Length: 403
Image (cartoon, helix red, strand yellow):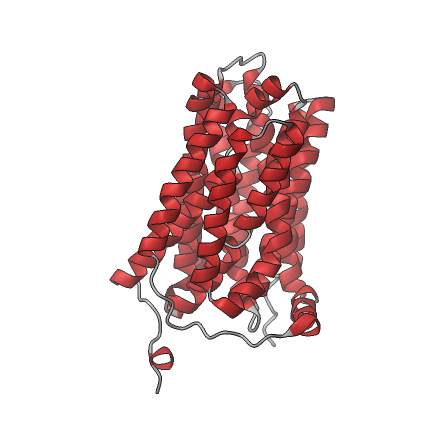
């Protein structure tokens, strides 16, 4: 019997398990710090480049479009060359491109570099989940996935907290450079810590027809489709809120400086907690109930931001963020449980939907914000969340036991 057949994966509490989570947390820092590196300084970027809020937000949307269109190709590459090798190539390429972003002399060049950066980052999120499912013992994969999502929240938070104060002092270009340097250090530590894969077996070349057959099987599964819709709508609304809340707080009646506005991303810490908490609750209450509860919490939090009161708005943002990451943690892990074959591709379709939502709704929310203000944007996102909850409740309803 081979070692890969006999070995059941890293067990919770083991040195290997801790190294897997630490390495993927660092990959999350490198990925999500870079992906959203301009979000904390969008008002500064819009002012410096003399562009609108929606145009500035394209620096986020095009990066996420780049990621979205490459998650599927990256998943097939990872099936051939290995999860760790694919993640290493993607993270290295993204880091190099990120270091070039502050040097962009024109808006088109800036947006082009951000698109390429996102395309390189497409090699991380879905592959990370596939790697977890292979290298961590099955009973602990849901908790490990929740821990990974918690790590990604810290990555996104770190990038934004670095960018805000640096941007206030020296401009958005210096902020982008600082985040890229943070990502470089994280990428190096990831390569040092990530354990060698032991259960990976290269998949045979399937060709275009085989790939389409695999993807078609996932796309025709109603339960997976409901999760992909959830990823698209919730992530789109989530990014729209964070893209434009900074503009709202920067303007009257709040009038907060960019450094203070960047602190709103501390709300991500609620997601760090809720993503792991939700993963643990699924064993007691089931994925469906926990996911729906996350959506309800998210909606209630966003409703609080409709009040022109700073304390209510910030408290609502914390609740909104916690609810979102609880739902996302459950949804991302659920895809691997539903898909019995082609798990990397199932996870990639989830990430494709997730980042397309980020790109499309994250940008389009600016049109509602610019035309009708914050209430229009908040109500739109609430409607998207309610739609998601209804679809999830119907498609994932428990099977009736025979009487």
